Picture 1: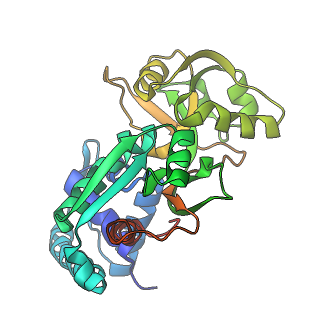
Picture 2 (picture 1 turned 30 degrees about the vertical axis):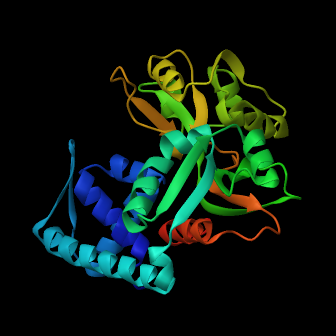
Picture 3 (picture 1 turned 90 degrees about the vertical axis):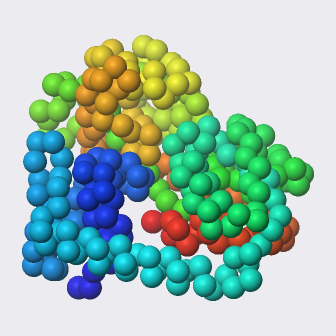
Length: 301
């Protein structure tokens, strides 16, 4: 089996951040996916690339040599993916871009910065709005494109969507919670615990879908529109929650530890992607931005 670009990205991110968890956050994927990718890479190369320790990971001598090669490969790939754009790399204009709350806070910043570096002639006019307002803006032409939770898209008749990646939803618990000792955790187990419910970006509505399937309901003790409030409350032992990997961080603002566990039942992913008006041709600048994101992230990976 040949090595993949994903494996190289995971290894570079882990080597540069010194933490598997930080690499996972940068890539918007689970820690287990990063670990598996790097272990697969090490198996193919026949050497250990990273040294694991209590404080994180460090590169081995073999890892340091391979890191330089991996960076060179990724630089060549970036050049190759930009070259098909030809004259579009010098595009000018503006893109009126709608973003939802979660996308603005946990996804957009680094991609905005990377796009501006590569396409300085294109101005991105970002506007954070609720999903319904974004969908209306796309239909009326007040917005050119949106980066939003495509898994929440309602107006599929008038809008097209392209999913860029899917973020798994998992159970968040405080450290030393009894459920961490279970071999498997079910929604029935979670229903017996106090639950912190996030409301922003229709999170409570989405949660209702998978709770209803099993005929259960969470024991909600507090609702909030703040992800950081959820994080702090879970870490402090006030309750548990189910949220996506994209917004997960292992520490609260107060420095308390949070843990993640997968659930036995299938929980729908939180999908992030591009949305635009069906049948309306994108302008040059909007088309360049769409191409940039799809090449950067792939489609539905």
